[in-house]
Image 1 (cartoon, rainbow, N blue to C red):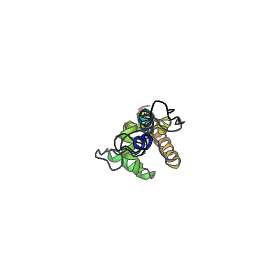
Image 2: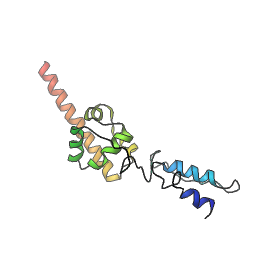
Image 3: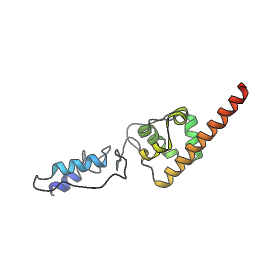
Image 4: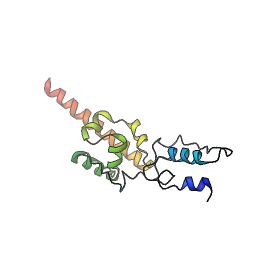
Amino acid sequence: HSPFVRALLDAKHGIFAEGVSLQTAIANVSNALPQAQAPISMKLEVLPQNFCIRPGSTWGGTRKWEVDAELQVLLQEFKLEEHAGLLAERGGVTLLEELKQEFEETDVEKLGLPVVHAKRFCKMLQHVKQEETKNGSGSEKQKN
């Protein structure tokens, strides 16, 4: 096999290696090419920087990400429960309170979800914010 194919398919650093981002894999392949050969150039701006073909730790890897029960119920309500690990790993959110206070619609893009799931995720965030506003305004009325 050529140096390109060997680097591309390398089990630890190639494009299909578990946990290796696509950008890193392409850089590894470019670095493995002979100096006379032009480096690989691809437009990857549309993908999240840490996009992996085989993320591993999120789907079937050794590390399990847990989210609290309330957040799990919310994810199930919006048919997004399969992305709980992704939300925890890439979004840093494991608690419903973290989602309410720290996660914005602009953060959804960083999760690298399929378009339909990203739209559902945005709807879920809007729902959470509306509920928070409704409950917050209700508690304000009780104070007055």
